[in-house]
Amino acid sequence: FAANDQMAIGVLAAARATGLKVPQDLSVIGCDDIEASSLVEPPLTTIKQPIEEMGKNAAEIIIKLIHKEKPAHRRILLKTSLIERSSCRAL
Picture 1 (cartoon, helix red, strand yellow):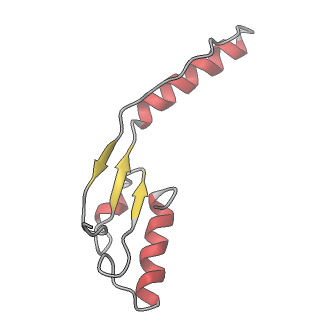
Picture 2 (cartoon, one colour):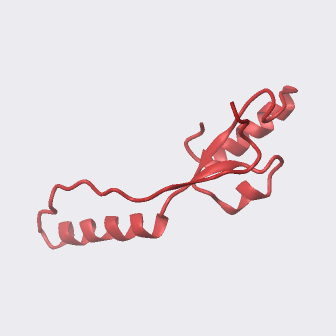
């Protein structure tokens, strides 16, 4: 698992350079579902996050801080989804 798709794409390149086959020898999963993740070979399995909703929540907190309001301590759970492509082998 890589922290983001760009790093995972780097792992795909490094695997190819060292002769490892993805997903036969190494499974790779990224995070973010950037456009390039579907264009690389093999297409990258990734976790899609609700970026707009994350940004909206962050902006609301920042606006409260700017107005000297204390934001409520709360846990925000957002739905993510696994985008299954070809870089991860079934075990």
